[in-house]
Every structure is written in structure tokens, then in C-alpha cells.
Length: 338
Image (cartoon, rainbow, N blue to C red; front, side, top):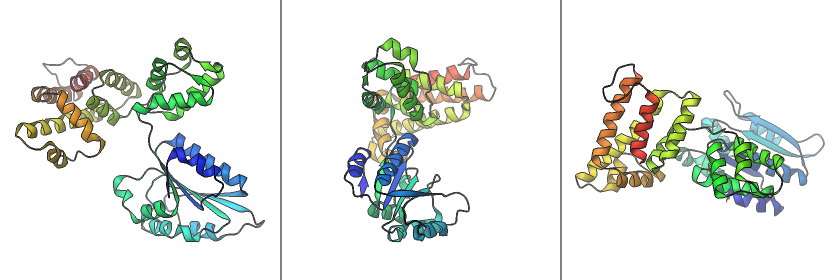
């Protein structure tokens, strides 16, 4: 049985707990909260004992089978937690996870935590078995577009609210760092009483704790968000991110756009060209929007600009650009995002 995050509370309140829960998520805060909720519900139903196994290098999967079959000295019901931070159990582990549901008795509740499987792992027999036989909870990342609504919901839980401008300000300060976002929201609850928060109070209280991802920078470029591109590059510079990695990520998007634009100019079908260039899923829409916004000449100029930035990073002089690599990257990002 597959559960959505918003269904978990009602499922736990219904009273009948599953013997096996799987939390698959890269959003650590939400995964922790879901695990806490399951543990709390289990404790109310008499699961007082707890055993935790960590799947690390050289982990012996026989430990899991032994833990499932072991009985408490005092006859207590047990929560058995299996934490698999790598997300890959190996051949032996995959077989064990497929055989896990029948091993769990009435007195054991197993809670498996792992990262969200990638598209290839999703097809594995052990994942499909867990999705079929466990209460399988896959919690997606809170993307930037959803972040203001998520913040608004969290504020409402502590009887607070904020204007759209205030929500956007908080989102900009905590993007990519949901644990810090949770802390900042709780801080607003401690510093200010219930009711609507003034923008000045938010400005004074919320720290800049955003963490930026190089690949989210590419997403902002494709979406046509120049202000976000500028903010992310500034954040990446402050975090000391490697210039060659940033340039590579940006240039890959420019090359992909240029290939597709050339294919369109030859009269090829865009859907087929995207498939040939390995553009799948949500990126199809982002790439499509960028192609409509940018001309062939603009993309060719952007690729030449990337080559000049590469020279600067390597310590060579460029006639077209100044010696400031970060400024040059900003100009490249804005050329695609505008």
C-alpha cells in the first residue's frame, strides 16, 4: 500500500498499524517527522521496546532476520528500525527485503528509512515488493515553487500568518535547507505572538540560511528566473563551490538547448530530438520553455561566452570578458534566464 505524506496522520489515527512501514525520502526533516509520528502511534499501542539497525558497509543481513525472530524477555511488542542511508541493499539485502514481510510477527513493527530510489532502482524487485506489501511512504522534496505554501502551512500550525511578500522573503532565505526553515519558523513563533507577522519583524528575525545546489541553478536558468540565478550564484560563491563544476553544469544546459534548437531548424520533431538528447520528465517542460524564449543566435553566443569563461578559470586572458569569473558566470546565467 502506498501512502502520500498528507495521508499518514489519518492512517495512524485509524488505529490499525501495518507491520512494515517504509519511508523513502531525500527531505530529511519530513522523513524524521514521519518516523516520529509512526513511533508515537506504535507506543500508544504497546510497542515499548525498540531496536535500531544501521545498514552500513559489511552489514550482516542475518542480523535483520534474527531481530525479526527474537522475542522480548518481558513479552513486550517491539519497534524494529532499519536505517539504510545508502539506499542500495546489495544482492543479499535485496533478497532479504523481499522476504521481510512474512518474517514479521504480530509483536514486531518494522520501520525502514532510506533515500528516495532513483528511476532505475524503482524497477528493482525488492522496491516493488515493499510497495506492494508495506505501508510505503514516499515523501518528495519541497521545491522552491512549493516552499512559500509550505511555510504558510507551518506558520498556521503556530497560529501565525504572513503576507505573500513575507512568505517569499522567508523562502528566499531558507531555500534548499528545510531543517533550517523549520528552525526559523519556530523562532518566529517564539519571538512573536499569534497573528499576522509584520514584514519588518520577518526581516529582522529570519537569517539567511539558504543552501544552493549547482543543478538547481540550471533549473532557475531554464525557468527564466534571473533574480534567482543571481541569488544562487552569490550563495554558491559564499559556500566556496568549485567554479569548473558550476561552469560545466551551465554549459551542459546551453549545449543541450543549442542541439535542440539546431534540430528544430532542420525541421526535426522536438519530442524525438529531446529523446535523442536524453531530456526526460520535468526537464522537457523547462527545456521547451527555454527554447521558445531563446533564439539560435543567443544560444551560439552563450556557448562562445562559456568557452571564454573556461579560459578565465584556467588563468588565461579573454578579450571579450573581464577577469572576474563569478561576474562572467552571472552574465552567462542571465543570458539564458532573461
